[in-house]
Length: 172
Image (tube, rainbow, N blue to C red; front, side, top):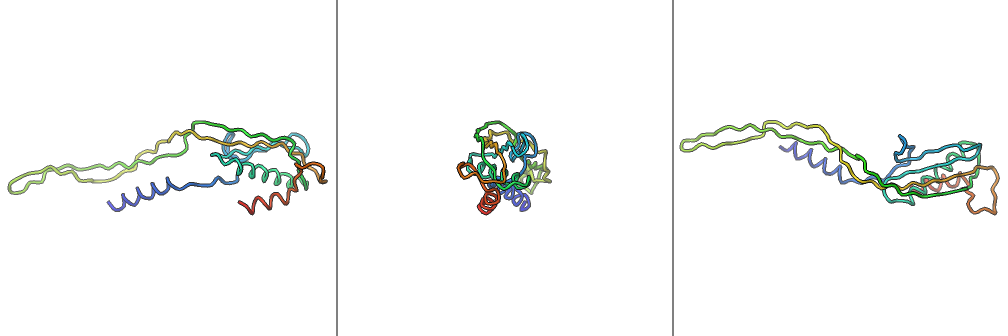
């Protein structure tokens, strides 16, 4: 019985812990994370999707991806040519719920004067897990960037890729 209580406590504790979205590539189309598409030489479209309403974090992650791509392609600076923000709502299966089934054995205990019917647990079995469907709200940040090796001081949307990457990584 103590084992069952411990297992149930761990399951409830795991359900209560909140996780901060991590910076990662999207595992599939439409999954949380970043996607990048090259439009032409030195020009990319970046999307970062994050579950929940933390738009500021999604913007940071999109800028971090822009800085990484800029450095990977041998450039020092990038200009945000276009930016957009979308809010998506969808219903999806986000977790599974294990179920513990307790089976009991019923028998009669008889004393000198009376009999009584007793049911005691005989074993516990973990049954199949079922998905929990829920509404999920996601923020999507879209950036179109142009990369260069010269800083255009007249444009306020020009970023130093190395500085942006360092600053955002330190903050996260």
